[in-house]
Image (tube, rainbow, N blue to C red; front, side):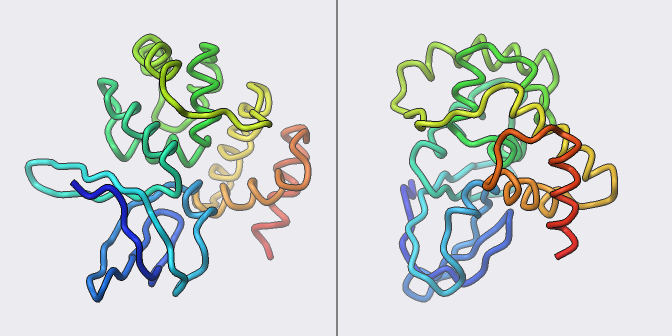
Length: 198
């Protein structure tokens, strides 16, 4: 199994990258979190990988950190969560924020993610709380609180309903939150709209 790839980043979008490793181009699906951590195109990068095998396809997923890959593996081990949903969840929250939400039983934060209903959130908490507690996925010095996660996801849903695609909306929201993490949802949407028009 491929554990990681080191090579030149030749193509980069918020959901997919291509890495040239000694003349072979590897296409990898990525989350928005990984996208933000990767260098610009043509830089040398190291990306951790997970190969998902289906009857009709082989899908290679890439991660900027081992902790994100481990969280991805935890997520897809839960019934009803496939790689695409897991990728979307890791775009809506970082691995550390997901760990915090699962360990604290924060159903509101989990259900704010696209593709996660209440039953799925309850299953995540039930199946992963103990497993994640034993795993070496370190929490950062700052962990987003439940209201902050809800505010971010409310703003994301609002931007999407206004006609912006998900990647554009997520990028704008993250840019705003870099400057101020405690904005009310209305102000977050207002400032994010300014970023989307740049």
